[in-house]
Image (cartoon, rainbow, N blue to C red; front, side):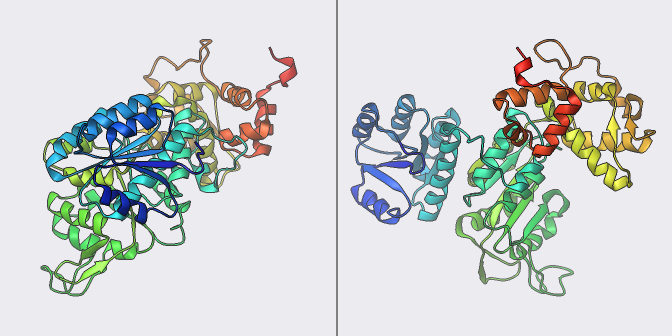
Length: 452
């Protein structure tokens, strides 16, 4: 299958609905329809491949869950969407949680919602099946995601892909992993980059004025309201809005947010006039929203509308190989901030950074280096300049040969993976070509012909 023209298969026993689907999606998509799940399985068994398979829930001979489960067994790469009535919601949840269904949509399903789900599925499909072109230049904003680990590289790739579509995105991960930065970068590489990027720190808004802050209010809408107020969604018109720590939104406001996502409209507090909006919603949280749903603290329908595309940012302890480059970048920032020519870090201090578990993640690393830069002498951060909590760790992470992971190891690995092409290695590391030449020389890495 041509990955630049991914195929879509829509399976439903309602032939009128299939014809309607063909009309709505006749432009921009390569699609096929089938009125029988059994016939659709035969297509897959004969080798037909699709990027996205869409199925109705209730069909004669085989239900949608069974069909999509068997389709997944034949072709695990295809992304799967199920259409269901509200009565089937609980069963559909089980299908989603089993991993056999990527998205589910309730009937009647607006074509805009189905298009959004299809587009995000195509993004995921391409990520699963395409090999990255090593020569491809990444957009500049993505270079702000610093690191050489596989997890950081994958995050860059996914954000790059999501910048090409307009789907809702949910960033999750521990505090300090960079969710807000990831959201900002996503906005900067999207078609909305020239419009506002508005951050909303949900925990900082009191429940009494939450609606007014998000959607605006009219004079007299509540006690102390002496004039009309513009909400954050209006400010973000045409751009993106980041709802940070989305789990802290009051339960009574969640239905209004759901209305904005599904209908692209809202009403100001104290007003009955409907306002349409064109805003991309990006959500972020360090909480377990599925657990919140189970506890009745978060609406299930809102969770699944926010969770159209879910990216989890890994904690720093799971990608320690990113620490040297993050350290270099932070030290360069601190040198500018302190008006110094440069800061450096001793080998022992770097080993201390590498063996720490970083419960505060990247934010904790940055603050630790800021403390070190404040206390160090002659511009060199030593172990004793770092926070005492870092000194208590005793075991350093090791490479396969038993040595502590160093920048030498990281440079060498990048060069090997790039086939000793320095330009490719530089792109992998997120640094310039001239920078990698300087680092290779400083690290004393010999030329390829002198190595085993």
